[in-house]
Length: 276
Image 1 (cartoon, rainbow, N blue to C red):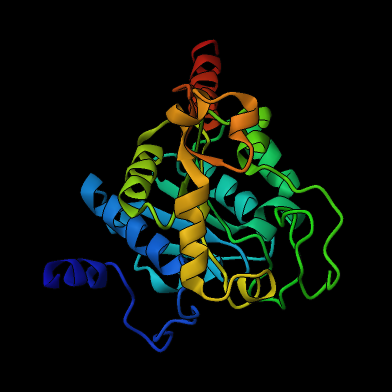
Image 2 (spheres, rainbow, N blue to C red):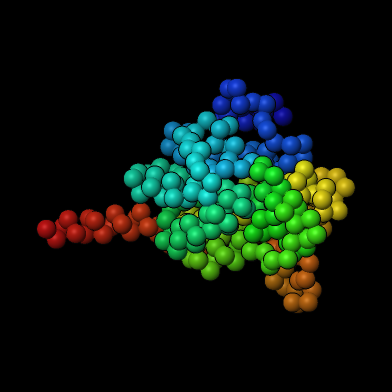
């Protein structure tokens, strides 16, 4: 345990931003640990990594980790990350966003980053709510969700982040949960090593703004929900459609190994220079 604790601290900034702002039971700390373990296991130098984050609880990771970091404006993390990757393709650029940040104000940017297949590793921390900004329902809040802006239950159909990423052209798409931490380590490590636009949706609980308003008595109940209602993709696909109802599949949905935009751009530039 001491070795694990030391590993975590080797990758954190020890400054006035600690102790962290995450609520008791929040899964974002588990994601932070998983990201650090993945980076460490792959042997990346901290100076070779840029972590770009937007606004919200997930955005605090850009404050905590000892990488090159950009804590940018709401919904614009992917635009900043695109510029960084195109300017220096040798950098490992990681983008951390919440479900509201990624799918609402930043939704159009996600679609086009995936369409371009630019070489970014994108982690979308999905807690089905705007956690830091007041508990409004988000584009991934299930229909019927009670929130600060839907006290009688929200009426809109929610986005499926995995479906959106796949339809938009991302070359690697996966989903995990903070309950399945070992599996999450593998998914993030996998995504970091793949070319092109790689997206991992991570289901993480927000009991403060979502759980206690939606019939979860404790945050433990939310983790138990992940245990009972998620299923590995291989097993999920073996079920009949009527048997799949109520389950959320987790695992790797696409792995196409297509070159990123920055690689194709460099190839085109070299070709044009040769023709001069």
